[in-house]
Length: 469
Image (cartoon, rainbow, N blue to C red):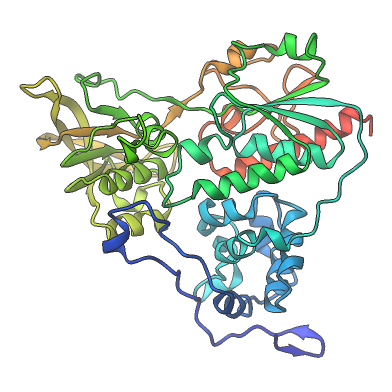
C-alpha cells in the first residue's frame, strides 16, 4: 500500500477492476450467479484506488453509514478479517448488500474518483469481505436485558433489527409467514443475483447470536399485537412485513391463464423451485415468448428468469425509454447481454385470449414522452391511433406493489389511507408506544439497504426506550 509521510496515496493510474462475470451466452440458460466476485488480487488492486478522502462522501451516501474508507484500507493491507469487522459495526449483511444494493446511486454515486473517471468498486469490495464470514471476530454482545422483542417479518429490515437488538442484549423472536427466512431476499430476488445459500448464511449467523425464528407464522392470523404484548409476554414489537401486494394493470384479460404478477412468478421459481419441476412439486408455465411490463429491478428479475426457463423471446416492455427506467443500470446491461429485448414507449391495453383460453398476446398503445411529471421524468403520452399487438404465451405485470393486509390484521397502529404503517422516519416509532415499524410497509417498495437502515434506526430507538437510556 503506497504511503507518503504516513498518509495513504492512491494508485491514480490503475483503471477500475472489471466485474468478474460469467459469459452471457452461457449464464442465460441456467441460474448460476452472474458475477463470480473479485479475486483476492482484484480486491487489493481495487482497494488501492481509494483516495482516502478527508470528507468521505461515500459514507454519507450509504444509508447505514458504513465506514467505507476504513474497510477498503484493511483490504489494501490484506487484513480482511479486520475489514469485515469494520463493516459489521454498521451492517451485518455485507454479502447481501454487496450484491444487490444500488451502489451507483449511493456510495459509488458520490465517490470522488467517479467525477473524472470510474468510482471505486465499493459494492464488489464489500461483497469480497462478506463472502469470507469465517474471518470476522465474534460480535460483541451486551448482557441480557431481560426484555423480549417480537420482530414480524424476516426480510432485510426485520433481520437487521433483530441482529442489532440481539447484540444489545434482547431476547428476540422473528415471526416469518413463509417456511424459510429472508423475506424478499429469497422469494423476490433470483438465484443468479443472490444465491439462497448467502441468505441462509446470514440467517444462521443471527441464530448463533441467539435470535429465534418461528416459520409458517402468519401474524395477524396466528396472533395480533394485543396478544403478543399481552399473553405472549413481549415487551415490544417491530413490524417489517413488507409490501408485496401486486398492483393491478386494470385492463381486460388480466385474469387470463398465464398472465402473472411478478411476485407470484418469482416466488414460484425462487422459493418453490419451479425451475426444477418435476423434481420439486411447483410447476410454472415455460413459454416461447414472454412479455414483462415494467421498468424496475423486479421487471428485470422476471424477464431474466423467463429467459432462463427457456423463452426464445423475452421482452421487457416499458412506457418510457431506457433512460427513464428505475432499474439498476447493471441489471439492464446484464439483461441485454443475455438477449432480452427492450421495447420502450408502449403501454398495455388488453391481454388477448387464444382459442385454448390462455393468453395469446397483448394489445399495446405506442407512447411518446411529454413534459416531466411529479417524479421528474417525462410523462408518457399516447400517440393517436398507434396501437399494436404483441404475440406471447406468458405475460407478466411488474408495475409495483401495494401494502399487504398483514399490518391491518396485526393491529394496534395507525395506518395511512393506502394501508401503510405511519412511523417516524428516524426512530420507527408508530402511534403505539410499544410498536415500531420499518421497511417497505412504511415507505412503500424501496431498496434492501434502505430497509436495513430503518431496522437499524428502530433497534437503536427501541434499545433507548426499553432500557430507559
